[in-house]
Amino acid sequence: MTERTGPRRRPSRPERQHPPARRRGPERPPQDDPAREAALDTLRAVRERDAYANLVLPKLLRERGITGRDAGLATELAYGAARARGLLDEILAACSDRPLSEVDGGLLDAMRLGAYQLLRTRIPSHAAVASTVDLVRADHGSGPAGFVNAVLRKVAERDEAAWVDHIAPPATRDPIDRLALATAHPRWIVQAFADALGDTADELAAALRADDARPAVHLAARPGEVSGEELAAMTGGEVAPYSPYGVHLEPGAGDPGDLDPIRERLAAVQDEGSQLCALALTRVPLAGADLRWLDLCAGPGGKAALLGALAALSGATLDAVEKAPHRAELVRASTKGLPVAVHVGDGRASGLAEASYDRVLVDAPCTGLGALRRRPEARWRRQPSDVADLAKLQRELLLAALKLVRPGGVVGYVVCSPHLRETVGVVSEVTRRGYAQPLDGREFFPGVPDLGAGPAVQLWPHRHGTDAMFCSLLRRPW
Image 1 (tube, helix red, strand yellow):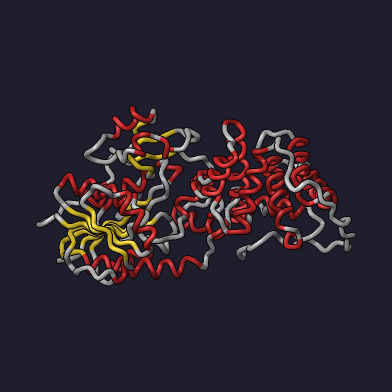
Image 2 (tube, one colour):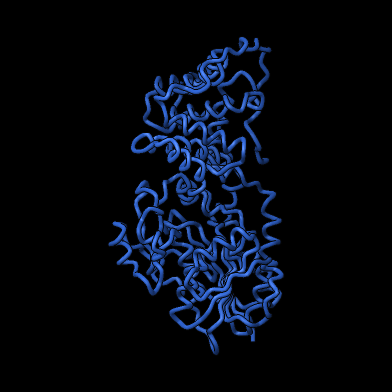
C-alpha cells in the first residue's frame, strides 16, 4: 500500500453553503480555561512556527502561572493531540463535509484538541465539545464555531476503537496500515520498526504503543562526585535498573532543573540508554595507551559530560567536537571543571590529528525515531526522504572517526533510532570495506536483557524503558 501523506480522499458531496460571515467574539477566551488555552496555543505554535511542543508548553505554563491540575491537563491535551495528529485527522476527515486542507489552520488545531478529548480522555463528551466550541467562538466567531460543533458531535458518535474499525483495513489484509492508524504513527515509521524487530504483530504493537507512554525523567550522576544510590536519595528517585549512574524520576515530578544536584552539576538529565552507550565505549579493553578520548558529535553535551567525568577518573582527557557554535557553548557549560577541550567544527573535517585517539564516540545526527515518546510531534515532522541524507552523513562521520582512532582503538557508533538504514546499514558498509572489525557489544551492556543476536545492541522503550538507542562497537584493525 502506498504511503499516505494525508487523510484519505472522501467521496465528493454536493457543494455546501459557506458558513455565515465571521462574527468576532472577544479576542481571547474567558480566563477560566487556562489549560485548554495553553494546549491550543501549543498546537498553534507547532503548526505555524514548526516549534517543539515540549519546549513551547513548559514556557507557556511558567509565563501564565498555570500549575497543578490545570498544568497536568494542558500537558495531556497538548502532547496527546500532537502525538495522535494523524489518527485524529483521519477521523476528522470522515466527519467533515469539506477536505481538511480547506479548513482554517486554527480551526483544525481546535478540532484536534476536541477530538483528542473525546477519544482518549475521560472528559465527558458534552464538556469536550462545549469547551472546544467556546474557544473557537471566542477566536473565530459563531459561524466557524458551528462548523466545529457539528464535526465534533459526529466524532463523539464512536469511540476510538470503533473509529479504527471504521476507517482502517483489517489486519489480515494490511497489518502495517492497520497498526499505523491504531497507534497514530505514519506508515513508514511502523514499517521501520517492523523491519528492526522482525515482527508485525504483538511486539511491534507494544513498541509503537510505548511511544505514547509518558516517559520517566532519567538522571545521570556525575562519576567521581556522587553515586547513583546517593543521587536517588537526594532526589527521591529510584536507582536505574542498568546504569550504575542512573536515576529515574516519576513522570510529572516537576522540573528537574530545579533539583539541587542538577544546579550544583552533580547530575544531569540524560536517558539511561544514552548513558549505557557511552559507558559501553569505556568498557572495551584496549592494548596499549588509553589516554586520549574523543566525542566527535558532542552537542548538546550529555555524553561528553559523562565521558569527561570517566576520563578524569582514569587519567585520560576528552576532546569534544561540535559543528554549531551555540551547541558548542552548551558542551562547554556541561563539561565545566572536567578535562575536556571543546572544538567548533565539522566532525567530518575536524582538523584533529589522525590515528591519535584511543576511544572515539560518534553520536551521529539521526531521525530520532528512538525518542518519539519524548517529542510529541516528531513522528509527523520527520519524512522518509530524510533517511537517505542522514545515512550518508552518518557514514561519513563514522569513516572520519575510524581515521582519528589509532589502530587497535575502539569507536562507538550510536544513533537514537532503530531504522535499519541508520543502524546496521551504516555499520555493515564500513565493516564490509574492511575499515573496522565489529565487536560483540552485548558483553559491554552488563545486566541488560533482550539484546538480540548481536553484535550490535538495539535498546527499546518497551523492552528496557530507555530510548531506542543503537550502539555498535568497532575496533580499527592493526
